Image 1: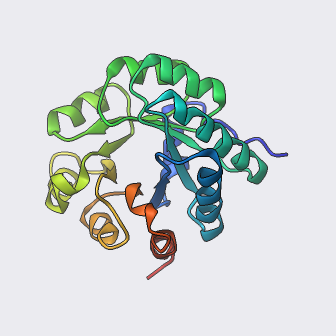
Image 2 (image 1 turned 90 degrees about the vertical axis):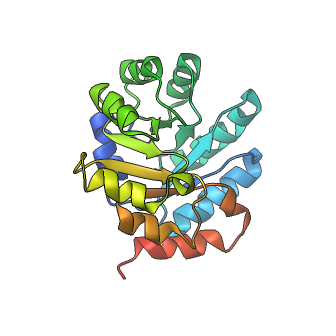
Image 3 (image 1 turned 180 degrees about the vertical axis):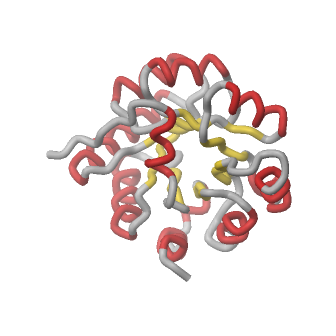
Length: 209
């Protein structure tokens, strides 16, 4: 059984996320459904899977996804990580990365201490500056559809060239491409995955046009 290698530093997100335009967020699902959707995503070529752990009852689903990932040599990230305690739990379970809806420098520091790359959420230029100063290389733009596609272009093509943004919040197969074209490096899709047609349609984004 192959164990996925945990990145040694936040810089490892460049290797983990670059070139992967789609992430599946498996929220509010039991362990069995989480594994089923994660496996479907992997089979379609979508390598990135995140399981949010906003409540303790979500942890078994993360554990199930991690176990399935180990069997296939795939890593799994933990989402909605908003406390140092959650960072410690995620690190102990062996996640590949953590994601948060906002920016908390204590969470960033804890992630760095535990050698687990962290993607904090941002929605303003000030938050972007603070996150970059804290050593974050990839940032989650949330909620993406509230910010709008023009926000991505304004940030990436304006004051922050080379900025790596994950568009999250309201993204689905219908609008994902427009956010990638606007400047997002990656789109993360959650609630839309209730529709079984979403993953196959999103998988089209990983293939050359």
